[in-house]
Length: 82
Image (cartoon, rainbow, N blue to C red; front, side):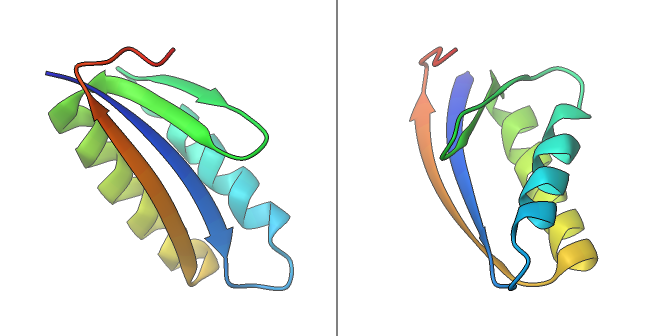
């Protein structure tokens, strides 16, 4: 099943741009997904298990590298957002 996920990241750090840029770079490093970044969010689209796997991995990576952050995400099943 196709899944589109819109995600916004709010790092809990004074210098918030590097963690956001790093997270977006990480999302773009995964194969098998469409990723498009907008000023306030990034949209990830692909097969549902793969999108969820990537989000889980990328958020854990972000926490290890940059510390705490808030992630706000919307999921749309069976919809091609890009």
